[in-house]
Length: 288
Image (tube, rainbow, N blue to C red; front, side, top):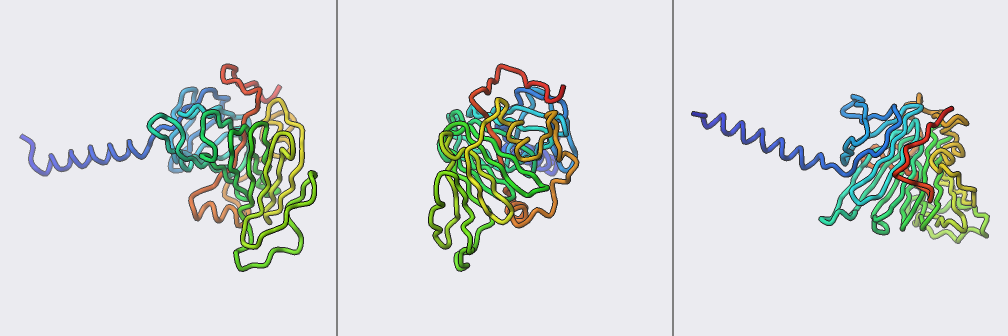
């Protein structure tokens, strides 16, 4: 016969397990893997294979040649390039598996995202220097910890890019406008508001945000492999398709953006998918 203390201990253990299961909610799975993809669990790297679950609050890493394609429950997809560190900060679903809200952080490297069924404005990406909001978008994002620049590129839909390091409300705007566009003069700055740019496939489809919050927006050709192509433009992927930054620590003195991310538990960046994205095709080798 079980004693009362034993029953209490068993009930407590069951409650803790149930609570852990609720917290560790699966939000998607890997659909393809190029060896060198890991989940960082309390500082321990766990190798992932095809079909591995992706859990909210997961930190995912790829080595110099690793690459993976994820499919979330709402059918949106995320392609993570070589030498990348990302964190699934939050991914909340409605009962019908549509996205209620999500935030994904890119600490370094490159990735691309295809929103597919995700509602407009439900998903946000952040890097140490920028945030990205999307509407029906296929986009890619890269962060270079050496240059401290974030690159965003869009192939479909609309995206808004904003710097994370902006003057406080009471601070006068800088003497030079931070937005530089080939499509005409930059808009007038409004004190206390973030200075953002809108990206569209037909107009300015690429933006670069530096550590000071300056944004350059322009039109740039989109590579067939958007992840690798943008990574090469940003200087995080080499000509052979492997990472140039894999050995650089993720936690580095990269300015206020990272400090804000660590302090708030929210870092993000993204890279997204292009029209050639086909989940039925395996990932092509990145090097000869």
